Image (cartoon, rainbow, N blue to C red; front, side):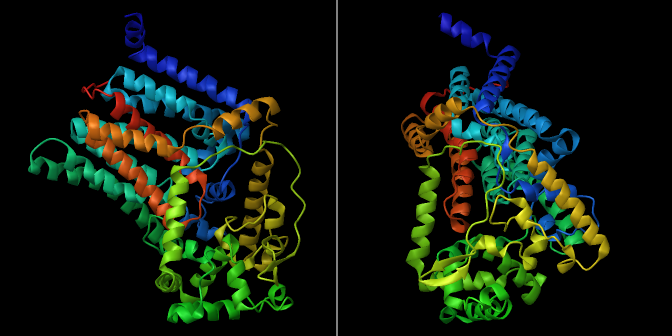
Length: 524
């Protein structure tokens, strides 16, 4: 009885405030081990933010390959108060996200909400994500209210709930473009909700329109400014070309597109001094191609095949390769997806230290020499695409000493220097301090040994099948939506834990609600 009274007392504003304070305290305790540091693609998000009002941005491709939410959330605090303010902002976002997951679970009962909050607080990989400047923590935070609105819209499909699902789907997409597949989840919500088919049809229009209209408006902005009606450019270059390139199976004999790509490589890359002096041939180049070369090929595709070609040659090359080696690609997608569900994660020790010395300029590929990625930076052909191609954490080795080799306009040369100087300054502020060794060791050990997402997925499936709590279709929708996002990443990427971590609380919510939830409709 006493426990019930405590749980009841925590249900409401007092409980929200208490949970927010506990989550905030947890963040700052973890910050002793994991001070805020640079995360995936931070430099490019900052470049995007700094170029938002530029009519002719030097890093023009960054503006259409990226989306605006992460740059604004990470760039605005840096501009106002630097990395210290950004860490404070991120701590509040983390605390709000924990409260958001409890709110998402609240329709399934007080105990379910409390258990969900406790488990999310204990998810150290999820918490660690909020100590790195990237889009990952923003995407992970937005998923909480998205799931909460889906649960409420399935239980009681009001117009406001359905519109909220659509708008948050758009926000997730504008944070991470793979979120576009969540439009399917938003469309499914009114279809699994109670009501007549006429009401479901109206709900479908509301949810889908609320998601697609903001995305269409944003695509229109990209069309006007950068001549590409798209939410984010590069879909055909990423899925499946980016992954196929890493599998080392591209061969001119595969088909006409592969021959066109091979001719481009031999003409525009292998004739460069770094390759010519080592006598690098096409086979060796393709075996050695990694992230840097993928961005270079994207840039050369825009230049040689045309901006409007939308990477058709790269896309067709990938499919020609898949047709000749279907098992290789399928196994790679399977392995990547399995990694997303069975990952282990721990942050590297956080230290303020000088950049690492450059590595060797040449490495061996299949017994033949090739220039190492670090020896090739900066790559003039990929200059407008930001720092995504940069093969080193030493930002100075990715900046052109003489920008005139890329930018012919004096105004763009000046703007280039201003932008890279600002990004260099912001980069120098991170990490804010050294991590406390004793704490980071314990935190990373706990993080590494936490249950993998697969555990929560299995628990959710078993709970839904055998318990079928009221509102279980909502759990299926959010679970399948999360799986679709992971599947899109698996189609285009090699295993990378940061793609999966933001989605882990989705599976936690589904598991706890399926195992314990009562799904009584509550408005709190």
